[in-house]
Image (cartoon, rainbow, N blue to C red; front, side, top):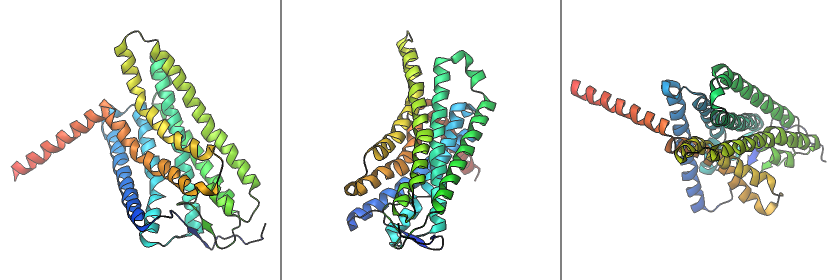
Length: 319
């Protein structure tokens, strides 16, 4: 290993995507649209859950936390990516990179834990409906949410401390579109063995274990649904889970593919596209998944839209 000084005063070069000019314009348009749709869609969900009494239920409470984490997730990656694509200024200060590592870790772990909590909510609602009010109440939801944000904050802090103590030799080029942990470890001049062990431990505890709990929950849920006698009852029970199950597949699918396959220099650009999928596409799709397939939210949006129309009509007539 080369003995380089800590680079806290220096900057990283974010290489982002290697594309032609035409592809770059397409990428800029796509990233901008994804960012705006993510902010707009998730902000609507948070607003509706906060203001509409009918949506003051545990499921939508967790959904609002998921929406907030998704807004945070895209806000620390996509604006910088757009800046690089538009201005070709790919420099990022060490402090900005560590800030990105912190908020990406926080929002990613929060996403995983919230999805796990939502699967538990569905499990209790379908498998133990008579105990739902005692097992999932306001105090339980608040305690779970507090635990989620504390754990996410601690994990993010650990990642920043572990990364900020590393040394990097110039030129500090990050072959990615954000400060991704494994990429940072690979370009460090320090011994990163302990960091890689920590990363494996985090993947097992914070990704694999929650994913296993979600799969276990849905095994019991599907088993219970199949035992329901009426087809109408089965359809109603399953329809209450499809939005969450779709989000789980969309979120964990790219992560499993990206981190489950062996690393290769030939697949770097493809890896970035997989990362873009769970970093930008999934947060953008979540509001659509939960609105297009959810009667409660669709009815709420219709009612709110109707009220606003009446308000503007009355305003016009008064004038």
